[in-house]
Length: 254
Image 1: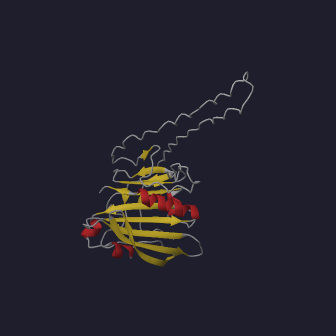
Image 2: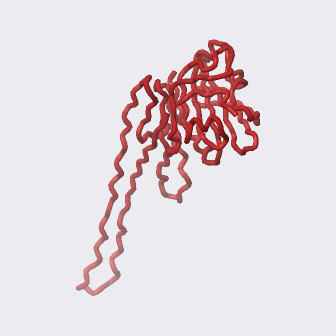
Image 3: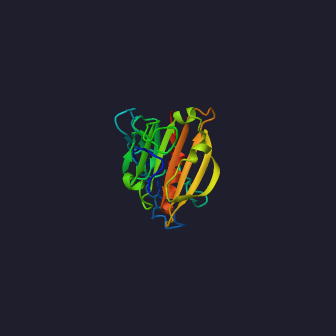
C-alpha cells in the first residue's frame, strides 16, 4: 500500500485568552434592629486579573526548513458551546499548532500531537506527463508519524500542496482527483466543495479492511491559476474534528 500522491511538510500551537471576573454580593441591611447595632457593610469586591496574552511573532519566509508559529490561533474559531441564558460564552479557539511549509506559502492548524512535519514541497507520482518525484510547488505533510502515514491505515495526518504546473498541463480539480488517492482504497463518495475563495471537489475513499476514511480535495481560485490538493486520513472521530479545524484555518498565498 503506497501513497499515490503527496508532498511533504510542518507543525505549531493555539493561544487561548480567557478573562474571568467575579464580584462579591451585597447583603441587605437587617430589618429594624436595636439602634445600637450597626447595619452590615457590603462585602468586598474582587476581580481576577486577565491571563497574559501570548504574542505571535511574524513567521519569516524561508526556503531552508518548515517553520512553526508558537501559540498561534486558527483563523476560524470553533463555535462556543451553549451557555445558560443571560451569560456570555467564553471564546473556544481550536487547540493545536499552526505549521508552515518551507516557503511560507502554506500554513494550517494541526493537533498538538501531530509532531511529525515535513515541508519541502510537493513531489507527486503517477500524474502524467510530470515525471515521478518532480517538485511541482509548495507542499507539507503533518502527522503523528509522516512515514507511517504513507503506509498504514492507523496513522492520522494530512498533506497540503499547491501547483501552477498542473494547470499549465491542463489539469482541473476533477481530472486531478482521478490520479489522487491511496492504493487499496476505493471511491465512496464525490461532491462539490468550496472553501473560501477556492472551489473544487471532495472525494471520500474507504480503505480495505479498515474503518479509516481518506479525504481527497482538489480546488482552485476563480482565475484557475493554480490547483490546491489536500489529503486527510481520518482514523478516529477526533480526526474528523481536526480535519474541520485544519480546513477552516488553511492559508495558501501562492
